[in-house]
Image (cartoon, rainbow, N blue to C red; front, side, top):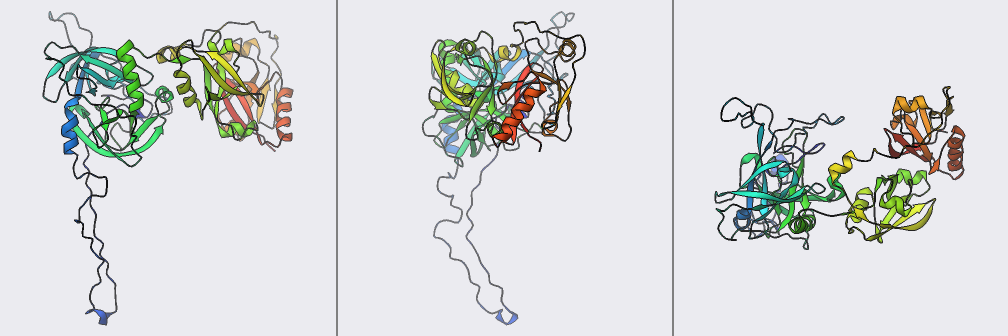
Length: 528
Protein backbone atom coordinates (compact mmCIF):
# COMPACT_ATOMS: atom_id res chain seq x y z
CA UNK A 1 0.00 0.00 0.00
CA UNK A 2 1.19 3.51 -0.64
CA UNK A 3 0.79 6.96 0.75
CA UNK A 4 -2.08 9.28 0.08
CA UNK A 5 -2.02 12.65 1.83
CA UNK A 6 0.22 15.50 2.84
CA UNK A 7 2.03 14.09 5.84
CA UNK A 8 -0.48 11.26 6.08
CA UNK A 9 0.12 7.87 4.61
CA UNK A 10 -2.92 5.86 3.85
CA UNK A 11 -2.29 2.57 5.48
CA UNK A 12 -3.74 -0.08 7.66
CA UNK A 13 -2.62 -1.88 10.61
CA UNK A 14 0.50 -3.78 11.62
CA UNK A 15 0.88 -5.71 14.82
CA UNK A 16 1.53 -4.82 18.38
CA UNK A 17 0.91 -6.81 21.51
CA UNK A 18 -0.77 -5.60 24.66
CA UNK A 19 0.24 -6.67 28.13
CA UNK A 20 -1.30 -5.53 31.38
CA UNK A 21 0.25 -5.87 34.80
CA UNK A 22 -0.47 -4.57 38.26
CA UNK A 23 2.53 -4.46 40.57
CA UNK A 24 1.87 -4.80 44.29
CA UNK A 25 3.64 -1.94 46.07
CA UNK A 26 6.68 -2.50 48.26
CA UNK A 27 8.05 0.21 50.54
CA UNK A 28 11.29 0.27 52.57
CA UNK A 29 12.30 2.84 55.16
CA UNK A 30 16.04 3.70 55.36
CA UNK A 31 17.28 3.91 58.98
CA UNK A 32 20.53 4.54 60.84
CA UNK A 33 23.27 1.90 61.08
CA UNK A 34 22.00 0.57 64.38
CA UNK A 35 18.59 0.06 62.89
CA UNK A 36 19.82 -2.70 60.63
CA UNK A 37 17.96 -5.29 62.67
CA UNK A 38 14.65 -3.44 62.38
CA UNK A 39 11.93 -5.30 60.45
CA UNK A 40 11.17 -4.21 56.88
CA UNK A 41 7.78 -2.57 56.54
CA UNK A 42 5.85 -3.70 53.42
CA UNK A 43 2.72 -2.33 51.87
CA UNK A 44 -0.31 -4.54 52.10
CA UNK A 45 -0.76 -6.90 49.15
CA UNK A 46 -4.29 -7.07 47.66
CA UNK A 47 -5.98 -10.44 47.55
CA UNK A 48 -6.48 -10.20 43.79
CA UNK A 49 -3.89 -11.94 41.57
CA UNK A 50 -0.79 -9.82 41.04
CA UNK A 51 -1.20 -9.71 37.25
CA UNK A 52 -4.94 -9.23 37.11
CA UNK A 53 -5.87 -6.72 34.41
CA UNK A 54 -7.68 -3.54 35.41
CA UNK A 55 -11.48 -3.46 34.89
CA UNK A 56 -12.48 -3.52 31.22
CA UNK A 57 -9.20 -4.94 29.94
CA UNK A 58 -9.44 -8.49 28.55
CA UNK A 59 -6.69 -10.94 29.39
CA UNK A 60 -6.68 -11.86 25.70
CA UNK A 61 -8.18 -10.70 22.42
CA UNK A 62 -8.15 -14.25 21.03
CA UNK A 63 -11.91 -14.85 21.32
CA UNK A 64 -12.68 -11.57 19.55
CA UNK A 65 -10.15 -12.26 16.81
CA UNK A 66 -11.49 -15.77 16.26
CA UNK A 67 -15.01 -14.40 15.93
CA UNK A 68 -14.41 -11.54 13.46
CA UNK A 69 -11.25 -12.39 11.51
CA UNK A 70 -13.03 -14.57 8.88
CA UNK A 71 -14.86 -11.42 7.74
CA UNK A 72 -11.62 -9.55 7.01
CA UNK A 73 -10.04 -9.98 3.57
CA UNK A 74 -6.86 -9.11 1.76
CA UNK A 75 -7.49 -7.11 -1.42
CA UNK A 76 -5.03 -7.50 -4.30
CA UNK A 77 -5.30 -4.91 -7.05
CA UNK A 78 -3.77 -4.78 -10.52
CA UNK A 79 -3.66 -1.37 -12.16
CA UNK A 80 -1.71 0.70 -14.64
CA UNK A 81 1.58 2.00 -13.30
CA UNK A 82 1.83 5.64 -12.24
CA UNK A 83 4.57 8.04 -11.32
CA UNK A 84 6.44 6.70 -8.28
CA UNK A 85 5.97 9.52 -5.80
CA UNK A 86 4.57 12.92 -5.01
CA UNK A 87 6.13 15.91 -3.28
CA UNK A 88 4.18 18.80 -1.85
CA UNK A 89 5.99 22.13 -1.27
CA UNK A 90 6.60 22.76 2.38
CA UNK A 91 6.13 19.09 3.29
CA UNK A 92 9.33 17.68 1.88
CA UNK A 93 10.00 15.84 5.13
CA UNK A 94 7.01 13.56 4.56
CA UNK A 95 7.01 10.49 2.38
CA UNK A 96 3.94 10.88 0.20
CA UNK A 97 3.66 7.84 -2.04
CA UNK A 98 0.27 7.07 -3.57
CA UNK A 99 -1.09 4.03 -1.83
CA UNK A 100 -0.59 0.65 -3.33
CA UNK A 101 2.04 1.96 -5.70
CA UNK A 102 5.36 0.35 -6.52
CA UNK A 103 8.49 2.24 -7.41
CA UNK A 104 10.00 1.84 -10.91
CA UNK A 105 11.93 -1.35 -11.51
CA UNK A 106 10.05 -3.45 -9.00
CA UNK A 107 8.69 -6.85 -10.08
CA UNK A 108 5.40 -6.87 -11.93
CA UNK A 109 5.83 -3.64 -13.88
CA UNK A 110 7.93 -4.11 -17.00
CA UNK A 111 6.16 -6.67 -19.16
CA UNK A 112 6.01 -7.57 -22.84
CA UNK A 113 3.45 -9.10 -25.13
CA UNK A 114 3.70 -12.83 -25.76
CA UNK A 115 5.64 -12.27 -29.00
CA UNK A 116 8.34 -10.44 -27.04
CA UNK A 117 8.37 -7.49 -29.44
CA UNK A 118 5.82 -4.94 -28.24
CA UNK A 119 6.08 -3.63 -24.66
CA UNK A 120 2.83 -4.02 -22.76
CA UNK A 121 1.31 -1.24 -20.71
CA UNK A 122 3.23 -1.24 -17.41
CA UNK A 123 1.23 -2.77 -14.59
CA UNK A 124 1.56 -2.51 -10.85
CA UNK A 125 0.38 -4.72 -8.02
CA UNK A 126 -0.87 -3.30 -4.74
CA UNK A 127 -2.60 -4.66 -1.68
CA UNK A 128 -5.00 -3.38 0.91
CA UNK A 129 -7.63 -4.65 3.29
CA UNK A 130 -11.41 -4.85 3.48
CA UNK A 131 -14.24 -6.62 5.30
CA UNK A 132 -17.56 -8.26 4.46
CA UNK A 133 -20.68 -6.38 5.53
CA UNK A 134 -23.16 -8.91 4.11
CA UNK A 135 -23.41 -12.65 3.59
CA UNK A 136 -23.78 -12.20 -0.18
CA UNK A 137 -20.33 -10.71 -0.71
CA UNK A 138 -20.36 -6.92 -0.30
CA UNK A 139 -17.03 -5.64 1.03
CA UNK A 140 -16.10 -2.21 2.39
CA UNK A 141 -12.61 -0.83 1.74
CA UNK A 142 -10.89 2.49 0.98
CA UNK A 143 -11.36 4.38 -2.26
CA UNK A 144 -7.62 4.78 -2.71
CA UNK A 145 -7.17 0.98 -2.55
CA UNK A 146 -9.37 0.29 -5.60
CA UNK A 147 -9.68 3.68 -7.37
CA UNK A 148 -7.53 2.73 -10.38
CA UNK A 149 -8.07 -1.02 -10.34
CA UNK A 150 -8.17 -2.99 -13.58
CA UNK A 151 -8.53 -6.26 -11.68
CA UNK A 152 -9.57 -6.93 -8.06
CA UNK A 153 -8.99 -10.16 -6.18
CA UNK A 154 -9.82 -10.86 -2.55
CA UNK A 155 -8.12 -13.47 -0.39
CA UNK A 156 -10.17 -14.94 2.46
CA UNK A 157 -8.87 -16.24 5.75
CA UNK A 158 -9.42 -19.82 4.58
CA UNK A 159 -7.12 -19.18 1.62
CA UNK A 160 -9.75 -18.86 -1.11
CA UNK A 161 -8.86 -16.35 -3.84
CA UNK A 162 -11.97 -14.83 -5.38
CA UNK A 163 -12.59 -12.29 -8.10
CA UNK A 164 -14.40 -9.07 -7.12
CA UNK A 165 -15.78 -6.09 -8.98
CA UNK A 166 -16.20 -2.43 -8.04
CA UNK A 167 -19.71 -1.44 -6.88
CA UNK A 168 -19.02 2.21 -6.20
CA UNK A 169 -16.52 4.57 -4.61
CA UNK A 170 -16.57 7.94 -2.91
CA UNK A 171 -13.57 10.28 -3.12
CA UNK A 172 -14.96 12.61 -0.49
CA UNK A 173 -14.73 10.05 2.32
CA UNK A 174 -12.10 7.71 0.82
CA UNK A 175 -14.56 4.81 0.96
CA UNK A 176 -15.50 2.17 -1.62
CA UNK A 177 -17.60 -0.98 -1.88
CA UNK A 178 -16.66 -4.04 -3.93
CA UNK A 179 -18.51 -7.34 -4.36
CA UNK A 180 -17.35 -10.91 -4.83
CA UNK A 181 -18.52 -12.14 -8.25
CA UNK A 182 -16.35 -15.24 -8.58
CA UNK A 183 -18.27 -18.38 -9.65
CA UNK A 184 -16.08 -20.37 -7.24
CA UNK A 185 -17.89 -18.65 -4.37
CA UNK A 186 -20.58 -21.11 -3.39
CA UNK A 187 -23.80 -19.71 -2.04
CA UNK A 188 -24.19 -16.68 0.19
CA UNK A 189 -22.25 -17.91 3.18
CA UNK A 190 -19.64 -15.22 3.78
CA UNK A 191 -18.92 -14.35 7.39
CA UNK A 192 -19.64 -10.66 7.86
CA UNK A 193 -19.49 -8.03 10.59
CA UNK A 194 -21.74 -5.16 11.61
CA UNK A 195 -21.13 -1.45 12.08
CA UNK A 196 -21.61 -0.02 15.55
CA UNK A 197 -22.75 3.60 15.45
CA UNK A 198 -24.80 3.83 18.62
CA UNK A 199 -22.61 2.69 21.55
CA UNK A 200 -19.69 4.99 20.87
CA UNK A 201 -16.51 3.90 22.71
CA UNK A 202 -14.83 6.48 24.91
CA UNK A 203 -11.35 7.89 24.48
CA UNK A 204 -9.14 5.36 26.24
CA UNK A 205 -11.28 2.33 25.36
CA UNK A 206 -9.74 -0.64 23.60
CA UNK A 207 -9.65 -0.91 19.81
CA UNK A 208 -8.62 -4.00 17.81
CA UNK A 209 -7.58 -3.87 14.16
CA UNK A 210 -7.20 -6.66 11.62
CA UNK A 211 -5.68 -6.29 8.17
CA UNK A 212 -2.97 -6.93 5.66
CA UNK A 213 0.10 -4.81 6.58
CA UNK A 214 2.97 -5.25 4.13
CA UNK A 215 1.14 -8.24 2.63
CA UNK A 216 0.99 -10.07 5.96
CA UNK A 217 -2.68 -10.98 5.81
CA UNK A 218 -4.68 -11.71 8.94
CA UNK A 219 -2.55 -9.52 11.20
CA UNK A 220 -4.19 -8.37 14.44
CA UNK A 221 -3.13 -5.42 16.58
CA UNK A 222 -4.63 -3.67 19.57
CA UNK A 223 -4.50 -0.29 21.24
CA UNK A 224 -6.83 2.43 22.44
CA UNK A 225 -8.93 5.21 20.99
CA UNK A 226 -6.75 8.29 21.33
CA UNK A 227 -9.12 11.06 20.18
CA UNK A 228 -12.21 11.89 18.13
CA UNK A 229 -12.95 14.50 15.46
CA UNK A 230 -9.44 14.76 14.02
CA UNK A 231 -8.94 16.95 10.93
CA UNK A 232 -6.29 15.69 8.50
CA UNK A 233 -6.21 19.00 6.59
CA UNK A 234 -7.32 17.40 3.34
CA UNK A 235 -10.53 17.18 1.30
CA UNK A 236 -11.87 14.15 3.17
CA UNK A 237 -11.84 15.99 6.49
CA UNK A 238 -14.77 18.10 5.30
CA UNK A 239 -16.86 14.92 5.46
CA UNK A 240 -15.03 12.69 7.93
CA UNK A 241 -14.44 13.48 11.63
CA UNK A 242 -11.61 10.96 11.95
CA UNK A 243 -11.03 8.72 14.96
CA UNK A 244 -7.41 8.71 16.12
CA UNK A 245 -6.15 5.34 17.35
CA UNK A 246 -2.78 4.09 18.58
CA UNK A 247 -3.17 0.46 17.46
CA UNK A 248 -0.29 0.04 14.98
CA UNK A 249 -1.42 0.39 11.37
CA UNK A 250 0.86 0.31 8.33
CA UNK A 251 0.77 0.13 4.57
CA UNK A 252 -1.62 -2.56 3.47
CA UNK A 253 -4.04 -2.03 6.35
CA UNK A 254 -5.99 0.57 4.35
CA UNK A 255 -9.67 -0.32 4.27
CA UNK A 256 -9.45 -2.75 7.17
CA UNK A 257 -11.77 -2.58 10.19
CA UNK A 258 -11.25 -1.35 13.73
CA UNK A 259 -13.32 -3.27 16.30
CA UNK A 260 -14.49 -2.62 19.83
CA UNK A 261 -14.09 -5.38 22.41
CA UNK A 262 -17.47 -6.82 21.38
CA UNK A 263 -16.31 -7.40 17.80
CA UNK A 264 -18.35 -4.55 16.31
CA UNK A 265 -16.87 -2.31 13.61
CA UNK A 266 -16.32 1.20 14.95
CA UNK A 267 -14.15 2.48 12.09
CA UNK A 268 -12.43 1.89 8.75
CA UNK A 269 -8.66 2.40 8.87
CA UNK A 270 -7.64 5.01 6.35
CA UNK A 271 -4.43 6.89 7.19
CA UNK A 272 -1.42 7.19 9.43
CA UNK A 273 0.66 10.18 10.36
CA UNK A 274 4.28 9.42 9.59
CA UNK A 275 7.42 11.38 8.68
CA UNK A 276 9.09 8.18 7.43
CA UNK A 277 6.37 5.96 6.02
CA UNK A 278 6.12 3.57 8.97
CA UNK A 279 3.81 3.52 11.93
CA UNK A 280 4.60 5.94 14.76
CA UNK A 281 1.48 5.08 16.72
CA UNK A 282 -0.83 7.71 15.23
CA UNK A 283 -3.50 6.24 12.97
CA UNK A 284 -6.86 7.46 11.71
CA UNK A 285 -10.11 5.62 11.06
CA UNK A 286 -13.35 6.68 9.37
CA UNK A 287 -16.15 6.46 11.97
CA UNK A 288 -18.72 3.69 11.59
CA UNK A 289 -21.66 6.06 11.22
CA UNK A 290 -19.99 7.72 8.22
CA UNK A 291 -18.86 4.44 6.67
CA UNK A 292 -22.25 2.74 7.03
CA UNK A 293 -24.15 5.62 5.44
CA UNK A 294 -21.76 5.86 2.51
CA UNK A 295 -21.72 2.08 2.00
CA UNK A 296 -25.53 1.94 1.83
CA UNK A 297 -25.62 4.68 -0.82
CA UNK A 298 -22.89 3.03 -2.87
CA UNK A 299 -24.68 -0.31 -2.83
CA UNK A 300 -28.02 1.29 -3.73
CA UNK A 301 -26.85 3.83 -6.33
CA UNK A 302 -23.16 3.23 -7.09
CA UNK A 303 -22.38 6.77 -5.91
CA UNK A 304 -22.99 9.23 -3.10
CA UNK A 305 -25.10 12.32 -3.77
CA UNK A 306 -24.50 15.40 -1.60
CA UNK A 307 -25.88 18.89 -1.30
CA UNK A 308 -23.93 21.83 -2.75
CA UNK A 309 -24.29 25.62 -2.57
CA UNK A 310 -21.27 26.80 -4.61
CA UNK A 311 -19.04 28.88 -2.36
CA UNK A 312 -15.38 28.94 -1.37
CA UNK A 313 -15.12 29.20 2.39
CA UNK A 314 -12.54 29.56 5.12
CA UNK A 315 -12.79 28.97 8.85
CA UNK A 316 -13.74 32.15 10.70
CA UNK A 317 -10.97 32.31 13.27
CA UNK A 318 -11.04 34.05 16.63
CA UNK A 319 -8.45 36.48 15.30
CA UNK A 320 -10.79 37.37 12.44
CA UNK A 321 -13.58 37.83 14.94
CA UNK A 322 -11.48 40.21 17.01
CA UNK A 323 -10.65 42.23 13.89
CA UNK A 324 -14.36 42.63 13.05
CA UNK A 325 -15.51 43.17 16.60
CA UNK A 326 -17.21 39.77 16.67
CA UNK A 327 -15.08 37.91 19.22
CA UNK A 328 -17.66 35.28 20.13
CA UNK A 329 -18.71 34.34 16.61
CA UNK A 330 -17.76 30.92 15.21
CA UNK A 331 -18.39 29.61 11.72
CA UNK A 332 -17.07 30.05 8.19
CA UNK A 333 -16.50 33.09 6.01
CA UNK A 334 -17.25 33.25 2.29
CA UNK A 335 -14.19 34.10 0.21
CA UNK A 336 -15.77 33.57 -3.22
CA UNK A 337 -19.16 32.69 -4.68
CA UNK A 338 -19.37 30.48 -7.76
CA UNK A 339 -21.03 32.55 -10.54
CA UNK A 340 -24.45 31.14 -11.39
CA UNK A 341 -24.31 28.65 -8.51
CA UNK A 342 -27.04 28.06 -5.90
CA UNK A 343 -25.53 30.52 -3.39
CA UNK A 344 -25.10 33.25 -6.01
CA UNK A 345 -28.73 32.86 -7.11
CA UNK A 346 -29.86 33.12 -3.48
CA UNK A 347 -27.88 36.30 -2.88
CA UNK A 348 -25.05 35.01 -0.68
CA UNK A 349 -22.06 37.36 -0.90
CA UNK A 350 -18.30 37.27 -0.31
CA UNK A 351 -17.45 38.30 3.27
CA UNK A 352 -20.70 36.83 4.61
CA UNK A 353 -20.07 34.88 7.82
CA UNK A 354 -22.01 31.60 7.95
CA UNK A 355 -22.88 30.47 11.48
CA UNK A 356 -25.59 27.81 11.14
CA UNK A 357 -27.18 25.43 8.64
CA UNK A 358 -30.83 24.52 9.11
CA UNK A 359 -30.55 25.61 12.73
CA UNK A 360 -27.41 23.57 13.43
CA UNK A 361 -24.58 25.78 14.68
CA UNK A 362 -21.25 25.30 12.93
CA UNK A 363 -17.80 25.90 14.38
CA UNK A 364 -15.70 25.91 11.23
CA UNK A 365 -15.67 25.44 7.45
CA UNK A 366 -15.52 21.64 7.68
CA UNK A 367 -18.69 21.50 9.74
CA UNK A 368 -20.41 23.79 7.24
CA UNK A 369 -19.50 21.53 4.32
CA UNK A 370 -20.62 18.49 6.29
CA UNK A 371 -24.03 19.98 7.13
CA UNK A 372 -24.65 21.29 3.59
CA UNK A 373 -23.74 17.89 2.13
CA UNK A 374 -26.57 16.25 4.08
CA UNK A 375 -29.13 18.07 1.94
CA UNK A 376 -30.74 16.39 -1.05
CA UNK A 377 -30.42 18.15 -4.41
CA UNK A 378 -33.36 20.54 -4.79
CA UNK A 379 -33.94 20.79 -1.06
CA UNK A 380 -34.04 24.27 0.52
CA UNK A 381 -31.18 24.95 2.93
CA UNK A 382 -31.53 27.74 5.49
CA UNK A 383 -28.16 29.37 6.12
CA UNK A 384 -27.85 31.70 9.11
CA UNK A 385 -25.33 34.43 8.34
CA UNK A 386 -23.88 37.66 9.66
CA UNK A 387 -23.59 40.46 7.12
CA UNK A 388 -22.59 44.00 8.06
CA UNK A 389 -22.64 42.84 11.71
CA UNK A 390 -26.35 41.97 11.42
CA UNK A 391 -27.82 38.43 11.53
CA UNK A 392 -30.05 37.23 8.74
CA UNK A 393 -31.13 33.99 7.06
CA UNK A 394 -30.55 33.11 3.40
CA UNK A 395 -32.54 30.29 1.83
CA UNK A 396 -30.62 28.39 -0.84
CA UNK A 397 -31.92 25.68 -3.14
CA UNK A 398 -29.30 22.95 -2.95
CA UNK A 399 -27.48 21.73 -6.03
CA UNK A 400 -25.56 18.47 -6.47
CA UNK A 401 -21.98 18.48 -5.27
CA UNK A 402 -19.49 17.64 -8.05
CA UNK A 403 -16.74 15.09 -7.47
CA UNK A 404 -13.69 16.22 -5.53
CA UNK A 405 -11.48 15.84 -8.61
CA UNK A 406 -13.85 18.07 -10.59
CA UNK A 407 -13.85 20.71 -7.86
CA UNK A 408 -10.05 20.65 -7.73
CA UNK A 409 -9.67 21.67 -11.37
CA UNK A 410 -12.77 23.84 -11.69
CA UNK A 411 -13.37 27.46 -10.83
CA UNK A 412 -11.08 29.36 -13.23
CA UNK A 413 -13.60 29.98 -16.05
CA UNK A 414 -15.42 33.16 -15.12
CA UNK A 415 -17.00 36.00 -17.07
CA UNK A 416 -14.48 38.58 -18.20
CA UNK A 417 -15.31 42.21 -17.44
CA UNK A 418 -13.39 45.09 -18.98
CA UNK A 419 -11.28 47.16 -16.60
CA UNK A 420 -9.98 50.59 -17.44
CA UNK A 421 -6.27 51.29 -17.01
CA UNK A 422 -4.09 54.31 -17.47
CA UNK A 423 -1.05 54.17 -19.77
CA UNK A 424 1.20 55.50 -17.01
CA UNK A 425 2.26 53.41 -14.04
CA UNK A 426 -0.04 54.21 -11.09
CA UNK A 427 1.55 55.95 -8.14
CA UNK A 428 2.07 53.92 -4.99
CA UNK A 429 0.93 55.06 -1.56
CA UNK A 430 1.92 53.75 1.86
CA UNK A 431 -0.43 52.75 4.62
CA UNK A 432 1.99 52.70 7.53
CA UNK A 433 -0.55 51.34 9.98
CA UNK A 434 -0.57 48.03 8.08
CA UNK A 435 2.97 48.14 6.68
CA UNK A 436 1.71 48.08 3.09
CA UNK A 437 2.48 50.04 -0.06
CA UNK A 438 -0.47 50.06 -2.45
CA UNK A 439 -1.33 51.18 -5.97
CA UNK A 440 -4.12 50.93 -8.51
CA UNK A 441 -4.19 47.76 -10.64
CA UNK A 442 -3.28 48.70 -14.20
CA UNK A 443 -3.21 46.52 -17.33
CA UNK A 444 0.51 45.87 -16.95
CA UNK A 445 0.06 44.66 -13.37
CA UNK A 446 -2.76 42.35 -14.41
CA UNK A 447 -0.53 40.82 -17.06
CA UNK A 448 2.55 40.59 -14.82
CA UNK A 449 0.76 39.05 -11.84
CA UNK A 450 -1.93 37.23 -13.85
CA UNK A 451 -4.79 39.05 -12.11
CA UNK A 452 -8.17 38.32 -13.68
CA UNK A 453 -10.11 41.36 -14.95
CA UNK A 454 -12.95 40.87 -12.47
CA UNK A 455 -10.61 41.13 -9.45
CA UNK A 456 -11.07 44.55 -7.84
CA UNK A 457 -9.00 46.26 -5.18
CA UNK A 458 -5.46 47.57 -4.73
CA UNK A 459 -2.20 46.02 -5.82
CA UNK A 460 0.28 45.42 -3.01
CA UNK A 461 3.61 46.76 -4.31
CA UNK A 462 5.54 46.59 -1.05
CA UNK A 463 5.35 45.01 2.41
CA UNK A 464 7.31 46.16 5.44
CA UNK A 465 9.29 43.16 6.61
CA UNK A 466 8.75 43.58 10.34
CA UNK A 467 5.04 44.35 10.02
CA UNK A 468 2.28 41.88 10.84
CA UNK A 469 1.50 41.75 7.12
CA UNK A 470 5.10 40.78 6.38
CA UNK A 471 5.17 38.12 9.09
CA UNK A 472 1.94 36.64 7.75
CA UNK A 473 3.27 36.29 4.22
CA UNK A 474 1.66 39.10 2.26
CA UNK A 475 3.80 39.90 -0.76
CA UNK A 476 4.21 42.10 -3.78
CA UNK A 477 1.65 41.15 -6.42
CA UNK A 478 -1.11 40.29 -3.96
CA UNK A 479 -4.36 42.24 -4.23
CA UNK A 480 -5.98 43.88 -1.21
CA UNK A 481 -9.68 43.55 -2.02
CA UNK A 482 -11.38 44.71 1.17
CA UNK A 483 -10.78 45.72 4.76
CA UNK A 484 -13.32 44.70 7.41
CA UNK A 485 -15.77 43.81 4.64
CA UNK A 486 -15.55 47.18 2.89
CA UNK A 487 -14.17 47.13 -0.69
CA UNK A 488 -11.12 49.36 -1.14
CA UNK A 489 -10.34 51.36 -4.29
CA UNK A 490 -7.73 53.72 -2.85
CA UNK A 491 -5.23 53.99 -0.03
CA UNK A 492 -7.61 56.48 1.56
CA UNK A 493 -10.27 53.76 1.76
CA UNK A 494 -7.80 51.54 3.62
CA UNK A 495 -6.81 54.35 6.00
CA UNK A 496 -10.45 55.09 6.72
CA UNK A 497 -11.19 51.44 7.54
CA UNK A 498 -8.17 51.31 9.85
CA UNK A 499 -9.19 54.51 11.63
CA UNK A 500 -12.75 53.23 12.07
CA UNK A 501 -11.40 50.07 13.69
CA UNK A 502 -9.16 52.13 15.99
CA UNK A 503 -12.07 54.27 17.15
CA UNK A 504 -14.03 51.09 17.91
CA UNK A 505 -11.20 49.97 20.19
CA UNK A 506 -9.95 47.17 17.92
CA UNK A 507 -6.28 46.36 17.46
CA UNK A 508 -6.55 44.63 14.09
CA UNK A 509 -8.51 44.61 10.83
CA UNK A 510 -9.59 41.73 8.61
CA UNK A 511 -8.07 42.03 5.14
CA UNK A 512 -9.36 40.12 2.15
CA UNK A 513 -6.36 39.30 -0.02
CA UNK A 514 -6.43 37.78 -3.49
CA UNK A 515 -3.44 35.73 -4.65
CA UNK A 516 -3.42 33.77 -7.89
CA UNK A 517 -7.11 34.71 -8.22
CA UNK A 518 -8.01 32.96 -4.97
CA UNK A 519 -9.26 34.86 -1.93
CA UNK A 520 -8.08 34.46 1.65
CA UNK A 521 -8.79 36.42 4.81
CA UNK A 522 -5.86 37.67 6.87
CA UNK A 523 -6.24 39.47 10.23
CA UNK A 524 -3.65 42.29 10.29
CA UNK A 525 -2.55 44.07 13.45
CA UNK A 526 -2.70 47.85 13.38
CA UNK A 527 0.69 49.41 14.06
CA UNK A 528 0.72 52.13 16.78
